[in-house]
Length: 153
Image (tube, rainbow, N blue to C red):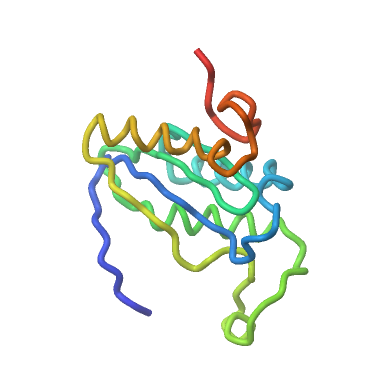
């Protein structure tokens, strides 16, 4: 397995983009309840604060903050992906490599993570999450997209 260079900071705040393998599907927005369940299942076992979450048809963005003594975000992401996959029927296409490794064909293997460095970075990434449904043409306003933690004030 490759040794990716990742930054770890106990109590850190992180932005993530997690993407389906098949980008043309609408699996996440269609099965948003199962995805939310997977996120909260993980949160009960490995606590974190959800600062922002938006579920789009083929990917999700979230900003989370870890507890002060914890920097293990990779396990949290792995648990979310695993729990969601476990709730899905085994109907997806799988490559020979994934079949050989016993992997599902739901998620891209990797994900994008970004350590939030300061308040401005935090605000920018929260805004990016909430603006994403508009950017992709799914909603006219942030408050119109139902699969988001955005609350109009």
